[in-house]
Length: 351
Image (cartoon, rainbow, N blue to C red; front, top):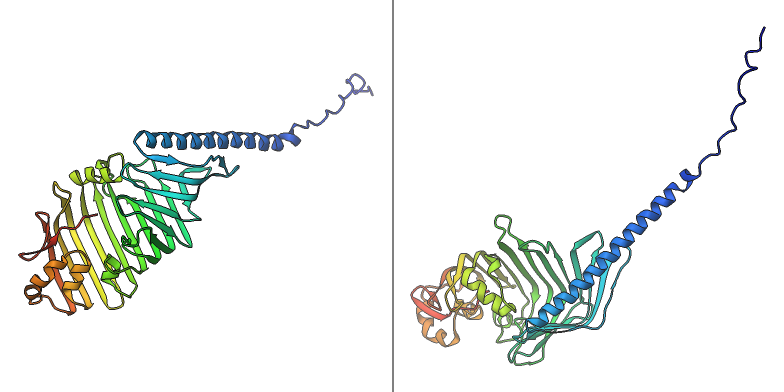
């Protein structure tokens, strides 16, 4: 029988196994790390460039801006900036100083920033009001949605203390257990902003709002509203921006609550606009519950001038109860505040 294998070529030697498969995962990790590093340094450079551009822009508008040299850090997953001796003062004299301000964002979500002031801040109040030293166990703020017409802004502080440089010009309150303020885009109108502010267990001096409204007792405050036509808020500083906004803007869905151990005051308004002098126009509905003297409440809230209390007391006390619940409407018109036909004070400055 013939040998059928005699003419077959010899079998080829076995191939050496490629080592590319062994190094592939490592090469992929190196490539991803290199790409992420390039991205982080690109973002860090943009952040630094943006901060410098904003500083130069404020200076061109007349602001006084100063800050110690800084650099962006936080590699690989965060973008952080430690700003020391930061001072921003508007042409009006209002502004803020931070001994230290830590600003940070996740590198993969650069549109949301968180700021912490571990050493407090100093507010420049303008005019003869002097400054206000602000401190607390935590002072922090967050900002997101910065490309939208109305961004998300949140400010929070615990164990807040406010000390004026001029003792004769105290702030609205001196201390509070907690302070919160929020700005959010309105769900129904892109050019409107929902705002909310809460203060818990506030204490204040006499002759200022909290001290007059709740002498010797802690006061809780809650204010919320919708600010409309926010794009009209334009100007080189807050004061000019607010003036411009009042010419076109309005306040709707206003609700305020003031509460201490003995008294609760609720105030609401469907809509408030402003006259040519920036004074509010519209109706404020108020309800007082507890034990109170109505005229004292109106005076503490800035809706009754002290000089009018004596003249108006016999007339208003005929219609205002002093216990239980009391409802009344305050009309803002012609630069004044009216209860019924009586002009009880000048219209307050709102917001």
